[in-house]
Image (cartoon, rainbow, N blue to C red; front, side, top):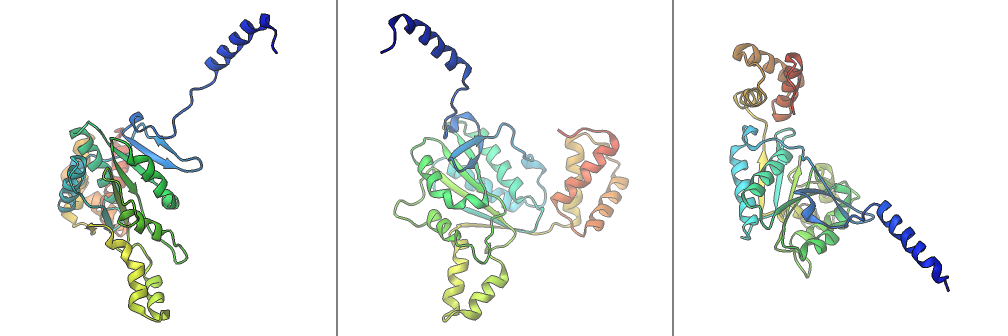
Length: 286
């Protein structure tokens, strides 16, 4: 038993250690921020202080899919029925940028109880059931987002994603929606699908099992390479947004040449050109 005379000293030492020790961070605290990254081992939501996003009005050439995704997101935030969304198609056309911009727009419109964007990495898809169990009892709405979602030939984690999206005994919580981007509509390589067709006893059933993951997304939004007019509209929009000197004919010619050297016209190429143009003019881009 401790000497009673030492108890005040031990209490002061304990208080001092508590002040020095960093405060424990809760593993799941959605009120800390508007956007998070989901990590596992241990499971936790890492707050993102500044989301890397493009403003919605700067996304050109994708107006139709922009409006569809924005409306779907608004319905979800309002507690109305909404669909999981798969954004698929051409590289660099703003699929992930649109998800982040749609979240920012709707989150500003509906600050309570809050629309939270949670990015989950492709390799952590297997932990989705645990993430959903955390979200289920919260008042906030959670927009789960996986960028560049695809699966290799020996990867079976797509089966757990299928169950999370529409199957399972519990089902997807009403306050959770899943958005994914992919360069492929079925998120599986074509040679994998063809191999299943050629080796299976019943080819149609084997292929259907592999491609049925896409069917779990009620909203399919296709992205295609933009026209030259749309590409140049992107360049002009960025110039106006960041106050970069815009000499129409000269900048247009440089932008077209820039796209030709890269063999593509898309939003990513336009942004890369803007970074070069801003650097030459000494204009910082926040």
